[in-house]
Structure formats: structure tokens, C-alpha cells
Length: 213
Ligand code: SAH
Image (cartoon, rainbow, N blue to C red; front, side):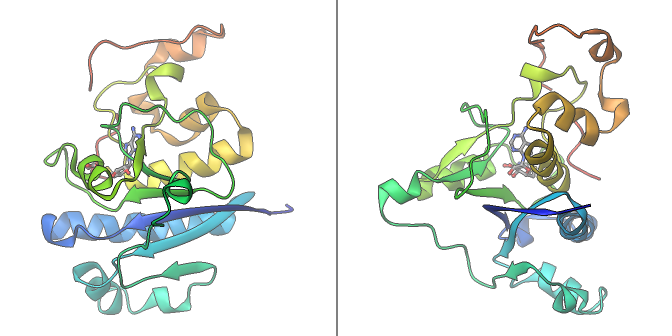
């Protein structure tokens, strides 16, 4: 397979260490390994970065995970917080992904920076990433889940699923396929597969894949 590099940055913001329980932090560690390996295998791959990698998560990687991250290639691991641009024009190219956002992401564009919150919180901290982004003047965006598929449960996806969906969209340019290829089958409502029309299904309840795997 010929792999293509897409000039697009994805930052996993690891600045939420203190807000997670030990098992959630462990889960985030595994999710980050998944992101790294998905980016390594994907037909289209992006510039993957970790920011604020400086506390408990780093500690876990350097101890239990035996420093495996030090062998990783094609990833930038920053101890400090990401540096967003001061120039409002440049800042327009930054998007913090959040299921709480009222802005819909329709396409992913090269030369933009997409931030994914590196946190497993099982719904404890609603608006956490949205509020952080807004304080920093960074626009937010949610994935168009309900616009393309029917799912059960909460619409808050895990960090690695969101990253995988971004990669899948870059490969397929099709949100429906990207969601179906990534979201666990038990979360997809069965009638999705019978609906081949261009209708955009809407769900009433506001509840996806639990933010816990
Ligand atoms: N309470 C946390 C939820 C973390 S889920 C919060 O405030 O965001 C892990 C990350 O995945 C989120 O921070 C967000 O960046 C991304 N994410 C999860 N579901 C999403 C969705 N439906 N649309 C856009 N981004 C999503």
C-alpha cells in the first residue's frame, strides 16, 4: 500500500491528568498507543502530536510502559501546552474538537490543526474541552454523527475513536463510512444499514460509544 502524508496537524491535548482516576489514565495511555499505531498503519497519515505530556501520563509511559514512546517515530511529544497562534487569521485554522460544540465539522482541511482532548471521564466533565478552547479563542467543532448515522448511547467518543474517524475520513471522504468503520457495531442502530438514501437521520435523544474504552 502506498501511504500518503496529509499536511494536517492533530494534537492530543494531555493536559487533563489530574482529572482522571487511575484506571481512566491507564485507558488513555492505551488509547494514545492506538492513535500512534493507527497513524502508522493508515493509508493517509497526519502530523500527530501530544501536548502537555508532563505529568501522570508521562510517568505511566516512562515506568509501566517501559519508555516505548521514546522509540516512536513521526510523532511530536511536547511537554508543554500547545502554542496556538496569536494572529486571529492564523487561529482560524485551529479547531478544538468537542462533542459539546454547536459547530459542525463538514470537512477536514489540510494545513489546519485539530485538537482532541486526551481525557477519559465517562461523562463527568461536560463542556470541559469546549470551555478550554473558548477561553483560548480557539473555535470548536463536533463530528457530524447524527447527520450520517444512527447510534445508541452518548455522542461522546473516545480519543482514539475520534482520531481514527479523522484518518478514515481522510481516506474515504465519507463520514458515514468513517463512522461505521470505527464506532463499535453494538452502538450502531441496525436500520442504518437499510437506509441507503441520502436522508440525514436525526436522533432526538442526546445521548455514543461510551468514553471509557
Ligand atoms: N468531557 C470531555 C469528553 C472527552 S472525550 C470533553 O469535554 O471533551 C475525548 C475527546 O474526543 C474530546 O475531548 C473531543 O476532543 C473528542 N470528541 C469526542 N466525541 C466527539 C464528538 N462527537 N465530536 C467531536 N469531538 C469529539
